[in-house]
Image (cartoon, rainbow, N blue to C red; front, top):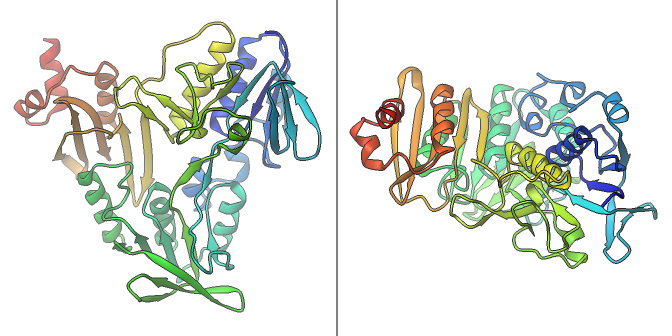
Length: 408
């Protein structure tokens, strides 16, 4: 194919696909459709450095505006509303259409809404875009009573920033532990305690049934227990769903995301999907997964660009995740899905590590304040299957010694 390549979505996956395709210099028209009226930007700082005013808008941008022109990337603002597969045309909300030979969907995810009365009151927020983070940053001040619904990474990162700003912070998690979807029970307990030590009121098993307001402005959170909390601001952070509406309406296969193969082709071979909106089979043996991380989104972008350039690369590698909150740098190598057993160890200077085993083989390593151990685990887990549970126990959970012993 030699016609246009159109990319829908200018987050990490979409931007990386565009940048890698531009570098490949295929001689094809390359269009990046941005759903926001600001230059493509990094998402992780929204709940960390930007929210705490340690980063400004300019520092979030992937590249300077001149990059797109010099790289031959047509950056356009618009909202995609439909795909005509027969005509190979993408339709935008303003009534215009773009022809494509290849279409890359990098639509990301949409924040889940809490279906309770009062969810639209002034003072109830979600955090998915720069505009959301800007409003929240402007509102945060010392003494503010803040409630966070959901103890995932975004909710906990916001709790960390709000606590540091002098707010009175309550985290309301309906489940039995913090970050249950992302972390082992051991690391979850460790991280939750760090938040409690920082002054956060961590409520587990706390379900919200309503928000109440006065003159349209949030005043109270009502819990299923009947308890009522007086608050000034609420962040609802209960996860995201893959943005699949565009693909579903075009008849593409959907299963907890847009279904793709190892080179990110959808059920329509000339349409690809990457990033948070897609679900892909991971070689680690846990089936089809949807990986919500910057590292994965960036890797997806590179892989799909290489495929379109006729230089396909191996399927996705070791999943990597990170978060920074309450003074803790949390890093994860591997996936916690299908883990049979967990072992933990306390390290010098308050560092902490958790090792997860799948079918007796080391499959995931979670670290808090242990960057060297994280890097070592990445190298080891990139060639999985070498370290068993008994081998690591024999070396008193010293991963460096265990790996050196195998080499020797």
